[in-house]
Image (cartoon, rainbow over all chains, first blue to last red; front, side, top):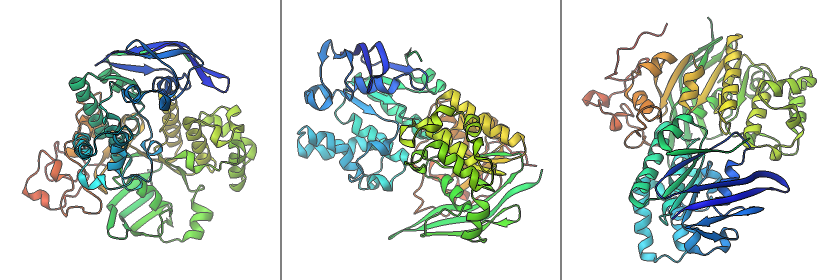
Amino acid sequence: MTLAAHDVSAGYRGRRVLDGVSLAVAPGETVALRGPSGSGKSTLVRVLALLHSPDAGHVSLDGARIDGVRHRVPAATRTRIAVLFQSPRAASDPRLSLADLIAEPLRATGHPRDLTAARVAELADRVGLTPDLLGRRPHAVSDGQLQRACLARALVHRPRFLLCDEATTMLDASTQAHVAAVITEEQREHGAGVLLVSHDDALVRRWADREVTLPA
Amino acid sequence: MSALLRVTNLGVRFRLRDAVVQAVTDLDLTVRRGELLAVVGESGCGKSVLAHALLGLLPANATVTGYAHLGTVDLLGCGEKRLAREVRGRQIGLVPQSPATALTPVRTGRSLLAETLRAYGRDPGKAGELAADAGLPAADLDRYPFQLSGGMAQRLVTALALAGDPPLLIADEPTTGLDRPLVDHTLDLLRRRCDNGSAVLLITHDLAAAERVADTVAVMYASRIVEHRPAAQVFGRPGHPYTAALLDALPGRAFRPIPGHPPMLTALPSGCAFAARCPRVSEVCGSQPAGDVACHHPIAVPEVVS
């Protein structure tokens, strides 16, 4: 199974950001997406995550073309592609407890209720969230703790592809290493492919199997 | 060189409904003219609270104890009026942590910068020059904050903090959201200020940034400074097991996370707060260590900070 962008052009209100970009991520591999500020890295992530419609070109999953934005594609397709954003605070509903943040994607797809709590507990443990933190809401935890919750949420459906958009940039070294270790383990166990947007040369050298650079 | 900022025995506590958060404990530090001190540590260890305490920007439920002097000004005792009129912006500049929330959405960058320059009795026409120093092209000055990317907003708040040409600049995560060339540009800007005789207190979780520009490094863990030494020593021969573990987590080194979790600031142990995660722990760690390397079992015998 491969996640791919085919000759994608995309932008905002007529401002072209991506111009005919193609990229494929295979299972189990980690691809670093690089390029200067404004070169369209985040836009390409949004296109691959089905959050932004390209003006031309398309996205495919396992060879099958996907049309339309995220909420219009079948759940079975969209749950295979997860995203971890740079700012967990901007990505989290402030009304939900961390446990509910992690569980929400399961509830949205009709996951058996009696299994949900166990899955949340398993993931919380894996990302290093202690049970006392799970009852708190985003304002009462640190950025690092909230990003751990966002990682658990991203992994809750066991996605085939995880798109990390500067997801560890704001984290301290130890939390970054832990987040990377959790994702690497997920890749090893379930063969998830990872797209890594990062400015950090050392991180890319350490983690990525190969690099794709977008032109300025 | 003479001490510009002298902080002694600083403590900050926040009263919550059902708990007390001990955000800063027994903190001593000195920043000299021309010195770039980097305060590093995990998120939530108290770094930003330190900055806000020095500027009198803490919320009403905070209790501050100890002493902090900038030159002859008693920062904790001089009162809000004097802080507002003489200190903030003029004596101590602050690059705030989240630029997006620090900017007035209804004013352009140029208008904000010009107003700030006027308030400090400087030429508002210098706005373009200041922005360029911070790496923001003059054309972007005529945009409103919501039209700026995170990195542009970051450069704008840096320019605003420099508008008063303050002798001390506190930069709280000033490189967040910038790509590598702009990170380097910002760090070089801070370094140049120090080389010209100003002082900078750089608060950052980015150890590579600290290593690149800092003269001295203070490593904070669970509300205390656990190691405070020249940068080359901290990065080359860390003395505190926490510093060593944090450096080992870097992708360029072992890329190994520190096992366990930092303690909650609402329930700090009476002894060394790192003991529960420390490979060198022993019985004496139940008491609070002190010194430039605050550890009962330091890794290397540290040289004395002169």
